[in-house]
Every structure is written in structure tokens, then in C-alpha cells.
Image (cartoon, rainbow, N blue to C red):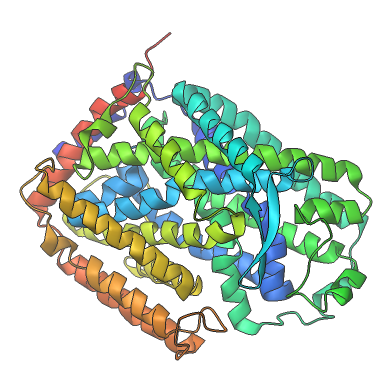
Length: 559
């Protein structure tokens, strides 16, 4: 049965609205965002946390992210909207849920461009004193110097300038940069395999020296999940692609599968290429390090006598994070644009230039990026926080998926996820597990950020600018037991180990079981308390109608 939303969705996908990102552009936007700074540091960090079992960590991390990606593939094709991760909760649950998801998403994406800049500058320290080495809580980190801060400001400003020229320029630049990044990472894998492969490295100091705990810690805190999170760009830019029904599933699912294979191969190559003497000197995996360790892959290439490869890696350490930072600056502005469209943020964030650029959102992203450098002046200090925030923002997707199946049973679904509630529920549980594995130190900081968001929501709602007559508290009530339950389980849990403020009362099996019970309970609560069909349909019609308008605003005029 056809619905008004279907008609409006067809209008929103009208090619006359000048969608400029094709299937390759959308796939490369996801792949380019995935292959950022994570691969430059992840192989070493994961090895330190899990030993050779880091191979399992990369594969399992990719699987968990794929579950989430599958959910969003269906949603993204149903409603190809810019900023879709923020827009979808509005359709199913209304303002409270959409603001919560949107705020967490915004915090995550707005701090991603800064971490990519920090990664580039850490590698660049080989040539200029952009960073200096410190020890924080027993961990060696590279923090920005005065020169590093100044250079970071310039790089962040450059992202804004490039984005000012609109999504067409972004897609052209990104395609070229992603081609380079894929070439370099594949070259590193082949070069490491050819230069040296020491099979004894996989067993000499134990395959999994930290056991199961180390495998799951690596997933959340070593940059593994962080390295996969860019799949979201296929969703966020769905409103700007020429054939969303075909392009979105290819971009979302294809990017995770492609990069997952690459990451596993890179981890195997890294472990095999290590000199066994280096492992012996470090007394195993936990203390593995290199001299002049500005960048571990470049350091290993130098140790192997591959000076030419080290030079290329130092070049790529600018290109890869720079490209990802460019992408996330684009996405941050569109998230604030989507929140304003939802009525959950000031309307000034809706304004676009004649080039289709949300300029106020771009400048806001620039300012927040600069602020993020102050409390998180190193890559290592920020990666776990961004990982947890981003995964937490994704967690609403499975709940939206289940609710929209009931609210819009006849809506056309060009890509339909099989298995009923199974994959969405597993995806929701997996999201909660990843946040838990990041550890109490990160979880409590994330929850403070969420509380700040609720304060901003109360102030905004009180200002009279919010659309609608209520916050839709009843349909968004699941937000509170979810966040409170996740916080309590983390506090009583055993991540990190040794404890750092947490009580360390729960072992792996018990914590995973409690998180499963929490996930099922919240899933059922969200499903049963979803918006009634007439209210959901009203939000959907409003959102899709606005999408048709904003496609014109976000698209530059024909030449």
C-alpha cells in the first residue's frame, strides 16, 4: 500500500535535485572515513593489548560493526536523508530520543577531526616538534606542543575552506585521496610479508597473553572499532547520492567487509614482520615499542630496511588522517543541520550558502574541534572516548529499525534485513558491549557529556524554539534505563583491569549476561512505547518533506 511518505520520498530522490555523489563516491566516502588514523596506530596498540590474538579482535570488531551497519543499510535506503543517524530516531520515538542520539552523535563526530589532526602531527614529529612524549597513567602518549597547536588550528581551518566549496568538490577530492590511501595500506601489507615473516612471533610469548579480557579490551580501546566507524558516511550522505537504493547498501556493507579484510591482513603482516629480538627486548607484547616511535608502522619499516616505505608512510600520515578529518568536518556540519531540522537545535544551524554548505555548522565544528585539543591533546587520550560515543549514538538504530517495522509495515524497503528482530537485537547488545569494554574511565566521562546535553535540551525547550508541543517523553523513556543501566554495569564491572575507579566485581561472563538482559529489556521497552502510528507518520511526513527542500539547499546550482 502506497503512503504519502513514499510519494515524498520519491520526490526527495528526484534527480533534478542535483545529487552529486555516485556509488563510487559514496563507497569511497565510507572507505576513506574508515581508513583514517586508526590503521596507523591500531596494529601496535592492539598487539600490546591482546598479542597475536589481536587478529581475533579485528575480525570480531568488524563483525559487531557489520551488524550495526546492516541495520542502517535498511534505514538508509528507506529514507535517504543527510544526517540520517540523527533523523531516524525522530521518526520512531520523537524529540527526546532524537535529541539524545543526535547530541551523542554530534559529540563523537565533532571530536573526530581533531583526533585525525593529532595523528598526522604525531607522525610529523619526525620532521618538526609538533608533539612531545609524556607518560599518563603509565601509558606513553604524544601531546601537542605550541607549534603543534598552531599547526592544528591551520589544518582545522583548511577543512572548513575545502568544505565551503560544497559536496561536489568534497567528492572529487575524496575519491583521489581514498585511492592513495588504499594503495599505501595494501603496499604496506605486501612489503611486510615480503621483507620478513617470523612465524614464531604468533606463539613465542603466547597467542593471547592477556586472555579473553585482552581481546575485548583491544576492540574498544586500541583503535579497532574506531577504525571501522566511518561506514556511517554512507548513511549521512545518503541524501546527496544519485541512486540511494543501490548505492547506500553497497557503501555501508561493502566498506566494512573491504576494510575488515585489509585490517586483518595488516595485523598478521605486522606481527610476522617484527624482529623476534624486539619482542624479547620488550619482554613480550604489553611493553612492545620502537625507538623514536612517532609512528609504529614507519618505525617497523625502517627496522626492516624499507626506508622508502617509511617515507611513504610519513606522507600518508598526513593524507589519511587529513582526508578523514575533511570527511568528518563535512559530517559534523550536516549533523547539526539535521538536529536543527528535527527542531532539537537552534534554527541558525539550518542556514546554507548558495553553494549548499551549512556554513554556521562548519564554523561551529571548527570551534569545537579547537576546544577538544585542550583536554585531549593526544591521539591515545581521545580514541577510546570517540569510539564509545560513536557506538552509543549508533545504538538507537536497531531500536528505530524494530519500531519502524511495526509503524510502517507497508513502507517500501528496497533492502530488507532478514531475520526479524535477531540482527537488530544482536547489534544493540554488541553496541553496549563495545561501550562497556572501553572501561569505566571512559564511560563516566561519556555520561557526563550526555548530562550536559540534557541540560542544553532543557534550556532549548524552555526557549520556545522547539517544534511540537512536547518532548515525547513517553516514547523516549527507554533512554534513561538504558544509560543508567550501562553506567552501573560499567561501574561494577572489570574494565579496565586493574580497576581505575570501577569496583571490578563482575567477570566477563556475568557482565556480558547483564548487558544482554539490559539490551533485551530496553529493546522491548522501546518497541512497546514507540510513537503511535499517526504521530510517527506525522514526523516521517514532515522529515521527508523537509528533506526534499534541503536537497535544494545542500546542492549547489547547476553550472
